[in-house]
Length: 384
Image 1 (tube, rainbow, N blue to C red):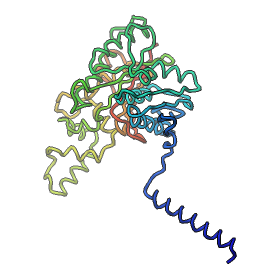
Image 2 (image 1 turned 180 degrees about the vertical axis):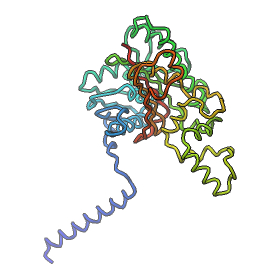
Image 3 (image 1 turned 30 degrees about the vertical axis):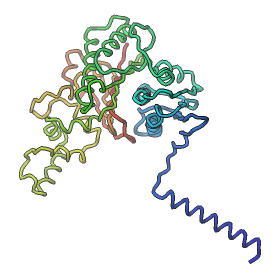
Image 4 (image 1 turned 90 degrees about the vertical axis):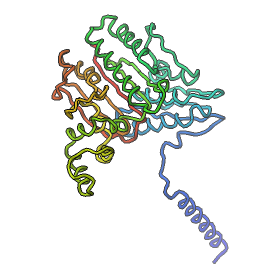
């Protein structure tokens, strides 16, 4: 073998050996296309925001949803622990619900002094306006964002642990969007829906936390005469809480009889039960039979079991009534990997909102491509 050929042969052997070593080292690892968007430079952890920050696209185009959840997780991982730059330079669009997720992730993590945070602004003025108006910039740079209920300006994302702030928000909605002349029935439905949602946070979302730790966040936006009102918490999620409720088994049997019969059949084959009797803990088997969206649907139903056991807000008549009182109203209910979406075909009469005819609404269930921490409820309501 000539000297040049021998040299090339040795180099190729070394090259193949290095490639094989890298392949063995990376075996079992998955490619993370978002990893390159988080890096350190000049003493700061730079977190690059996606082009579109949005959680509404969950079926056809899932990329924006997945990127948004990864961005939110990066904020939780680094903000509050390192100097951070949130880089929105490539961001072209942010939706209200996604902003609420990002704000809550940041607010729940800002806990250390001596940390410096910065923002790199977008090339799109409307994105920058939303970042400032939501209070995200103030929260990131100053560590806090204040809500002034007497202001005529758009309210930022606000957080609370009680109904006191919610009352201020309702007053603000009445003053700014209804010119202080909100119909009493409309005002009641707003108040009832918001209060029920916040009360559910206190009762169900944080079962092992102190009252002062049961935090929620609220965002209110108006776009094209549509009011976007969203409430978010970082609790355990609806699918984790309803399994422990006394009414669960009866509602499960009524709404999902096929899955119910499958469980009963399995238990009989294993000689666990001899009939359709309910035994403690049997509800847990339903977790493997139902999607998270179905669990949400169970929580959104009225008492269908015949037991008449109070659900303390689970059943959510007022949450649905707020949407059903508006033509083309939409309810978005996210929890874990489930989305329950309810559309009203027509505005119901005031007398019908307390007893909703399911034929006049369109509930749909969706499996999310990534899990959302906690629970987010959003109403889209016409304010014409």
